[in-house]
Length: 419
Length: 188
Image (cartoon, rainbow over all chains, first blue to last red; front, side):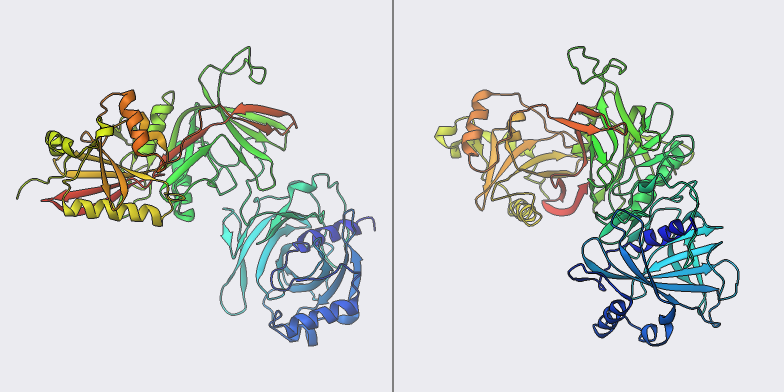
């Protein structure tokens, strides 16, 4: 029974995605009871925030409702309302509704759905679960999901696609893309964690990296399993580094870096990010051919700004950029840097270390649109090249890779991966 | 059809005839009063666009106008919003006033780059006087430092860097043919 807390923990983490949207209402924090949850759900129904009366009238197994406490210092009380599956459903399914008072003192409701990989008896426990756990708000809108195999989290799902009548499939979150107002977190959220799920919760394993699991919704970002609530905008965060400590490859996002081990993939990521986000994308070439793409927070449709520091949503520094100046009179500097060399220092929070990249060039994208000059260096582009002569400067469009200088001279480069 | 009056080549060739309109207090400055209606409309509309798109703030802002012929001989005016006194880095004696809005006029090479005429302290002083109250004054350049907390919890302090690319000041190129505006594009 020592396992109980952890499984429950997972659900807590999932559920606490607090921040309900329309189903939230300000209230004074107060102990919530099963009857209180019932009354509150009724009020949400009256207010039109629950579209289906069947949830209250027939779906919830009120006699099986129970109350428990979330993991975390506050041990927030939560009411769990089981919603048994039906034979009509194509996939074996188990549902629960959780009602609790969030960290903000807001009564919140969440629907958890457990989709089994294989059809199982509807009374099966969740002690050894393989499938997908999906979280929805009370309106039924998808909030997020986890891929789970034998109680081990394998990754996230970012949205549900309806394929045929009543059949749902889950799209793996490989891109960190936006889905219904959500940006999912890393592909693998809880590497090495063992988590049990379900109404009968069992757990084992050491969960000592609580802050590595994040769920994001339109208002808040919460670390799973802790119940902490951090107010952040609705944007992606960068993944943690790969097993060998390298940044994970992928395109940049508003608050996340992009990285590619080779330039062709880098070009691909930059152009896809430009298409997806509708802003210019800026990046840098490393001495060893890697490409580091800057978060796009500063960029707009026809302009970009490279900053010397970027931050995750939670305030941690992603990376800094600086110029080597081995000045013995400057106590903040360091002799290991080369004079006038541009560096990017990328911070690895998993190993509590940083990686240093020597930068040989800057690159940014131009959109090809009517009324623009995509294959010309703008006045600011030229000024950038004049102010940073120690590196090369490039423009990337859907059709060309161009090298330019501070005088507006431009030269077409034809690597095999750019048309 | 006669060649467009607008090219600053012509403007400059005939500049001496404009000198008479120069304010006596600004003997280094020359006000251009002979722009065609098409060019005046172009400049005025651009100023309005800059206001609408918030490139100007609190009533401050002027326009830099570079007149040039591109590599195939087409007459082009490059207009850019100027919010502060960075015009002192490339002073020009030529300016125009349209509907009360100030435009600094330059001659450019075939890529639209300003052909600089040197830095004359008196000219700069007169430009400052002419444009007083129309632009912000930039602060003196001071290195700024930022602190970063690394994954090891240590704080590092480094000079601040920012690099701009693209089109931050609404630079717009207006192509003319036979004195008529034919095409408008923006570098990005």
